[in-house]
Image 1 (spheres, rainbow, N blue to C red):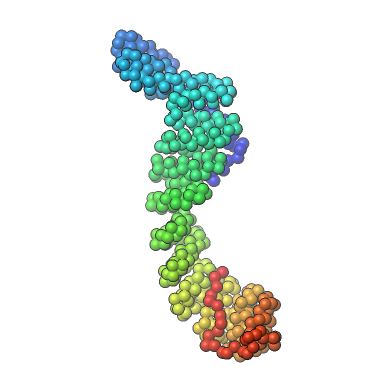
Image 2 (tube, rainbow, N blue to C red):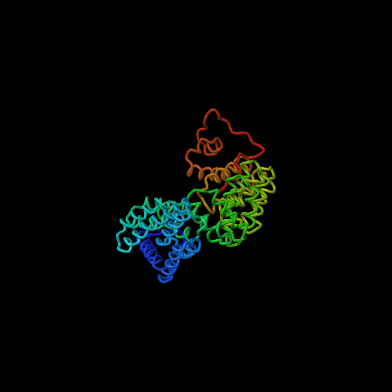
Length: 444
């Protein structure tokens, strides 16, 4: 099947014509040679006339091995069982098949003549006698498509797919029609049946997982991806997708295993994203130590990103491990010196550790890379104003801050430093604090 299972209307129409032609051709070549059929029929009827019914049955059944809907063989078997052997129930079964075969024969003639509507009518009549014949449902579905009756066609295809789930070739033929008709779950189910019939076929499982994801059947997609992983055929990206699905189900430990197994240089960004999702799931549970371990493992495996370095620093800070948080942030700016957000967050942590000179230095680097970081100008101004007592530097930082955030004039330190009216009731300078009023490291 083509990647993505996408088919244009013209392509689908071409497929239908080819399929119908193949169906007609199969009618001509699937049956045994005419001479063999005539020979079996002649011998069978002769044996039946002599009362040798069991031998006659073998002759007619030999025909059915190659041509299950041979009308002559079916009628003779009905005659023997129902009339001569008095096995009416079995005879009736062959009579049903004979009536269906007669309708199919008429339908085949109409199909060969190009009269699709008449062919469909005959096949529907045949289906009254053999409603559980998957091949007949498939053939009727293709004719309905050619007649522009897509809803009827999809209904017939669903019946065919469900009646013979072990026929991998049938499932593979039908999947594109379901996909093109918007029946993505049915298309995925076809691939799921192929995968079940051929467990060593990773392509079927891969496509089934893709289709289930597209159809919103996430648990079924997870099942296919788990089977791929168990067989060793899952790609790093597929393991990360599996990890995402496991995280949704709360299976965090299993998710961690698949993320670790998926770490490769080529999948670095995808693995980093999966690791971040897993760590965030741990954070929501308050499991900051586990989150820290995941971030460290991802970075050590070469899947580090600016976001992961920052998240690691935040996880350490949440555990009140300030030195570890600073170290993680420093590793981040060394790895990605051009990211303003990392310098800004390192500065915040240094300020929390009361290293005000180091904090100002990092804030300067941050705004040097991105002058629009309003919060960096504010925090820098607070340090200059409250702790370093450098009023000119504070005025400069606050001025740049309110140029970006005009409503910042209401902050007492800003108003006091710039000689602006101090909002009530806070009319006096804020007393010096042991630690600055700074936010925790932000995630970017």
